[in-house]
Amino acid sequence: MDAAVMHSGTRHDDPNPTLRQGAFFGRRKGKKLRAGQARLTETLLPTLRLGLEASAPAELADLFPHPVREVRLEIGFGGSEHLIAQAELYPDCGFIGIEPFVNGMAKALAAIDAKGLTNIRLHHGDATDVLTWLPSASLARIDLLYPDPWPKRRHWKRRFVQDQSVAALARVLRTGGEFRFASDIDDYSAWTLLRLLRSPDFDWTAERAEDWRKPWPDFGGTRYEAKAKREGRTPCYLAFRRR
Image (cartoon, rainbow, N blue to C red; front, side):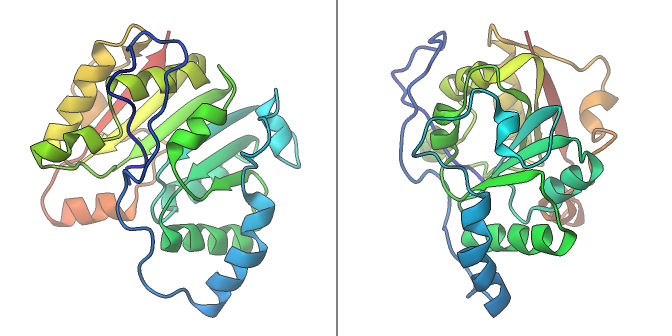
């Protein structure tokens, strides 16, 4: 799900790009929450939410109750399948999940509660706020999976991947960190590849065609990917390394 877009006037090489504020994602609420989901939203979410009203800790590992070797971010985690699977697969890593959609947040909370996960923190809102708040070079990886492609030309400015957002991602990724992108929309994959290739901060890691045709070894998929495959669309997987 798209979560942000940047000021069109911000320079691509600005070391601390200004992030444009506003609702650049779809609807925030769908079906009425079940009683258990509503309870977790009121009780568990406040204990896991990022406190953006205060400065970020110098070491993001301090956000978690147990030691973690690195922190990763997922922007727009949707149904949270990937976020939860990664947190289970890498218990020694900390994860920050961003999702503006109420029902997606409720699903994540239910899974976190059921599995007793302690290595996830959440932000129910706009990714621009988190990118501004995060310290420089504080993340090991950022995932953007099946974002809203905003297919109409007049809506392209709402796509998350813009030159300015790429610069913002580069600021918070450490050297050698990775930005992963997946989409079943060819136009958005090409759009993303173009903007990352012209960035002075990233290198595309692909060496052969199968590197963008096949998912990463630890990628378990998402409901959006399953839907795309059912409808005959082929996903594209792009990975870029921070210089």
